[in-house]
Image (cartoon, rainbow over all chains, first blue to last red; front, side, top):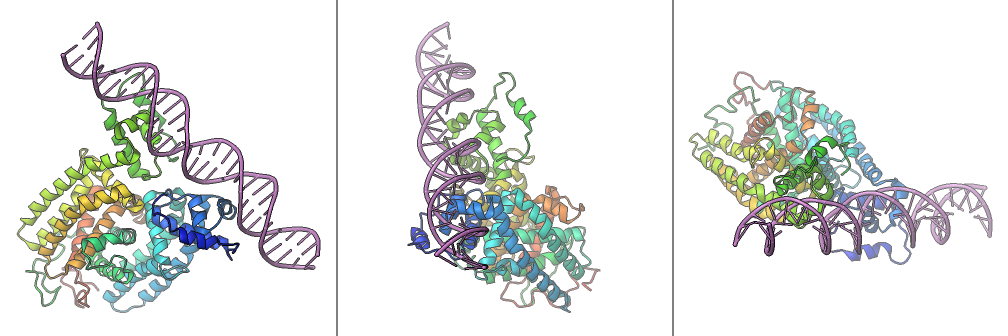
Length: 248
Length: 248
DNA sequence: ACCATATTTGTACTATCGTCCAAATATTCA
DNA sequence: TGAATATTTGGACGATAGTACAAATATGGT
């Protein structure tokens, strides 16, 4: 990792005089999370992390044994709270009467914790989700196991819930569409500036609240689309969808 | 890069006796493309590439000067043909009369070249798109410039075309939804096995043809959704969307 | 205050990284 | 064929990677 000129000021602040970090282990975890989620796992060295945390490289080895162990601990920290939050929101969503509202609530229950879960509510959630996005692209082996163990259960629970709200759509299509949702979610967190650029400033890709609303709206519509075994996605004269404004 | 036990047989085949590669430069490019798109840029060493191509590490430096230069050349190879293909398909799509069909054709014009463009039609397109996905996650600086220079024009052209088919939806929403499309597209190519896993074998994530159809269907529906400034995404009793099968 | 334990430090090890270079070898064309 | 050029080779360079370890220091219970 070479980028980002410095921010030498911050590093200096971190180890002036002999001010001890109250909990160096946490500082290392936080620094690693931030750096990994920004530059990727491979591009960040243990020394980079130690320096950002104001610690000694050996300290990282002491607390987490290996670099993979450090990554593993980051996942352990976040997976529990995040999936717990998702389960709570999903349970609440299931109790929504109106089928249309329920579907939206389910999608929201999936998306929201990705932006806000974790210990640190201000940006902590997006940081971890961004990390997951990068790791799924880099294809780390340590992570692959956690994914299959921890996240697949949650994914199945959500797909099942969606299937209950849309029983006429084959599960296979819902798996695809849920997959697209996760991809869109990841990409939004990894490359938010692209949205700002392409919209020429009229949208802010880093505005989590707005991103969530756009994502939910688009996903609900995608989930409701006719499955592939039905040739016509929408009857020709589909004016009622947008009342007052015909398509042409 | 340490993974994947070996495939030592292939390497041996590549340099048996004194059989010279007819064009070592191409072999290096192909090997680099394959490895980068599988493991990421940072995880693959110049020596890995040279070995996979049956070449000498020094040969890579000779042809491409630096590792970044090699990556740059891969992008140069693919960007031209891919965007040309997209332009052709987009122009054809614009000529479709029916607005619904036109929208679908536009989306298809965007998605299709990502799976099939490039010199090598069998997997060559997906390989390069997978590479782009990984690079956007890793955030390489060399790539960021190419993206903004080469791809933003295409993106704008597609957003404009979509906007013509859906004039009642604000451009900002279409930017978001186009962004989601790209994210879904990337994620599908990066983690296709997840689809197979979650669908318990009833879907094949690596089936490009099927992935395209699912992606197009979901995206068209997402694009048509009511914009955020309209509170109700669909009027309550929306039965006509799926003729014959009411929502409940 | 003292000892046992936990943590931090500084340094060193080996491996591998990207890149360079001179010599060896192929290729091309007068 | 022979000279000019293009390519390949094998080895080397300094830099940096992850990790290990003994010494130094901080901490907490008695």
